Length: 199
Image 1: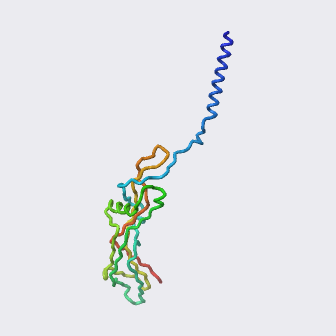
Image 2 (image 1 turned 30 degrees about the vertical axis):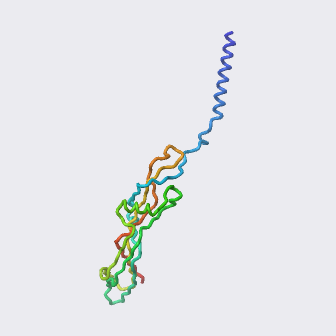
Image 3 (image 1 turned 180 degrees about the vertical axis):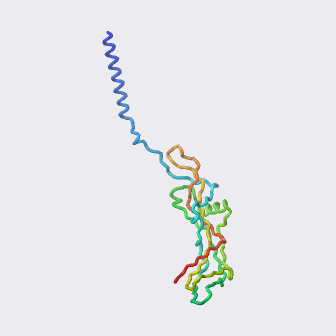
């Protein structure tokens, strides 16, 4: 009787082990489990901000808008000096360089409104005028030759961001984040001068 009970007990244990192995056989491998996927962002109004560009040469656009240019020639024996003999100005609007905004973030209906909010957040104007004045700019040269002289409006460049909610299949769905739209360059009253030797 005891042998029969031991036999039945052994059979039960073996059956339970088979059941465990069977359930393991139908377990979905981790490699086949769908990963958490980022689906993009949704625009949240009211959080527009400008970040300074870290690299010094990229902070400014010294040729943001052309104002005036001329070519001068000094012959040997002449005094190599030049003074601007005209007054010129240029009026320019801010320029956006946003990368695939409509593809990566939903809910933005009017980029012009975003632009206005960005400008207000940092105290810039979307339209600016730069002027060069007759007699104000004098150039001295070390030797005779032919030179190209050019004046430009100088722009200030920033990284443009807006508020956003994360859209994903993971636990971060709905979390607030800042989304980088690209860059925005504001017009200024500052001018930049460029001179190059032609021959």
